Image 1 (spheres, rainbow, N blue to C red):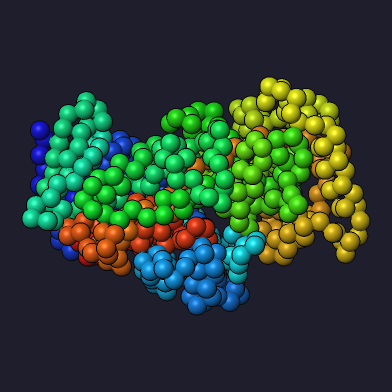
Image 2 (image 1 turned 135 degrees about the vertical axis):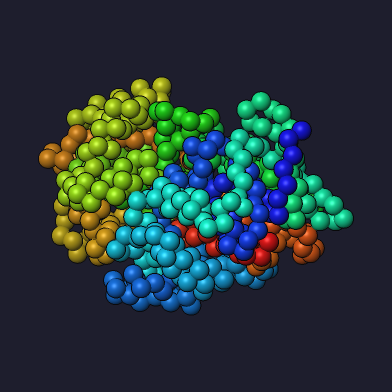
Length: 532
């Protein structure tokens, strides 16, 4: 058996694990970082993200004349997450992140070379409960790929990097104890199944959540969402399977709120899958009509992205068949359609300002062509009857009703034909509200009808629920120490990032204000590295 010895063992080479290792090196500790994936993927799921981070009270907000404060941010956080007084540690972590995040995450990252786009975006504005009162989503220039690259480079350029040992393709399966404290791990290599063990003074779990295991996602499906859909796509890391949650539980750790999940309502299968059920999360156009499996407009409250992601999933799952259609045209698609993450945002990922401006001014034609060429779920036609035929051919039945779609489109377009003061449609009102904020106006059409002959062809996109992030997990105190159900610390054991529900076993509550995930990874990783 291969054996290793170090002061601290970090399990997981994502953003939280890298940050924890960086802080440990800064304190002169020997670090063994065990990563289950190959070295090429060092950086984890953050490397694939779009790179938005939540902060309240930044200099960027002040430059954009956005009045915000930690007090307002914390009130929004508690309301949107529906955190009850009994959620002691999640509330404690939420308060700590809101009040300390600007100095300990935002400023800290900028000091290491991370740059942010010049204006924050406004997402999760809230629907039935208050969301973000003001724009707070600070997007890394270069997407999550740049964020991950900067932190990897900072780790490998650390003055004490000689104290760091990295081992890849190492799957940790269980924790070792001595005299009541966690002092090591055992596992096997992904390459040949051979066993290994490692010993240390402390262990930090940074292995991600459970949402890469679709069966676990189904078992912990939130009650708001009813039953899980028959088809569920995977937008999480392929190794985010809860193995270390089980290992921690075996040592007495309290695992909480696994039904608090961040899943998306608009997923399509990846045409070049890198894992089972691999899905892409679309950013649904606000100007598209969101239809159920029959082609009826979902309502009575029409679905519009950017207000309450949790509710979007709930509304789709309430349908007899838990998938949906987006109905739009090419003009809407070019301006508004996007895919979450860095992979399908190359202009942003590569920090090409000229191409970003081109896409804003003339539409993202590259993405449109990618979807039209590669995705069978992207149906294009010149008329509604042709479009319905294509939708039914894709589904393999006659479920989509031409009469239903005709009715929905005619009513919507007729409303837009009236004077703006007579726009008595909730979706149109929300679009007009969104366009009041300049960064959102750049990405949102103005009063765009579906059957505009100058805006064709018509498009229908079949969308499925896609699993993404775990917002519950291993419960921790404010030092990132793992707690038992009785609230006692398990000596030598820490948990960070998504493994810990980004802090406390679920600091977001059942809804996230978006951007709290990457920020929570850095925040909890820094704390664990300082305290371990």
